[in-house]
Length: 557
Ligand code: GLY
Image (cartoon, rainbow, N blue to C red):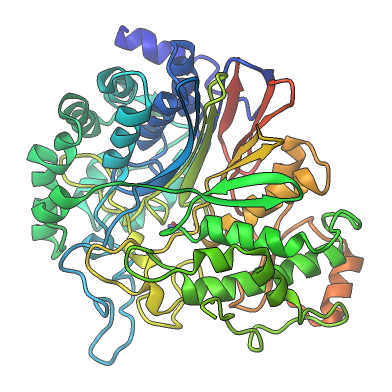
């Protein structure tokens, strides 16, 4: 397609995003950016399947949503394939890996204290990127279109430029002082931005062209690899040619559970997301949480106690299952969930200092992005992808135009010392060469009577799991519409710190007082999570919604 025609096509209605779309059967895409959503819809309209669209949206987000969309990070893709000759549920793990030269105490000084910012900013914060390998693996194995057709969209948008929206302009302006340490970043993203400015990214366009022409070799070898390794040499980083060459995505079994008759499919280790979500739902199934309102003190209390216990176990037992023994069966069993909530008392707040991790062996602010796709043929894709913090490690690879991640901060730098999400952890998530850092990303599919019901997921760091949880229970237990279930105010508890983090407008003054009297500490926080989801009705019609908290869009036809 002619480049100008494509940009014109995709820019139509740009300033009037559709955050909600309903009653469509042909296909639906919900993502954090309207242009990326339109790329996905265009691919489905051309006859591509949900996997083709997911890969097109993923590369497009790397151009139009540099806060989190990426080729310098990693992610997880859950696929439900409904082809006559191939029906399956699977997951692709393209999480970043610790470089070969990494080691357990690499972020500690001689006295054993964590060195400020070393795991969050600049070269040493970056894990070996997995996004390009993972997306191309998915496309080659489960897609129907060729790489060049899919990459054409992102190459053209980077090359010709696009009009930036308010969220990106604000984000770019507020990170200028951090960008200043990195010439490669200033080259593309330095300056003052306003809504409607055109952002052209020639270097990124060239990198994407190399991927389009050479596949994974266009990123992990040759010119792009040279630029990454050169940057590492110039800035005391450790990612080597060997790290890039050895990176492989892994296709893994999905994590499965049930909730009140619905089937849940989500992501397993190295994400804690799927295990934690199913563990939470298994606890909640023991209570009739539909009895009181979703924002009642009773409901918040029981959900908080479930979250406290699940996050305690997350900190102790979850890590990359290729390196440590994660007791998945036990943590996702209904029996274990019941045993963990037995000491819950309705007349008193729990106390995290008294709740220790169980014994299963006997036991992202908007730093990440999620998109959901349904293609109208019954194929579903749920993808959460990240460079961890907003704009990753803040360092654009010189001459290649993309941000590197700061995913190494998702490892435990030192037991008990919280990462940027306030999450603590232990040995299971210690740094080791080639290990994948523990994630909270929770790309999820829900089925009702064996038929697709929901495609969902969210950014939000450690709060991803509880955001997805509330989307599901709001739909199933509280009978909300898709839009209501996403836009409703949320809360979160993660064991430590021992506080209920709560969005404004969630609880009444009366319920706030009830919880406080019981001994809970409620801390008001700004909005979190940005769900992009699709609901499939029994008659096959679809509804899509992009969270009111973000600038995304859901479009169907
Ligand atoms: N970097 C956020 C996560 O993977 O959970």
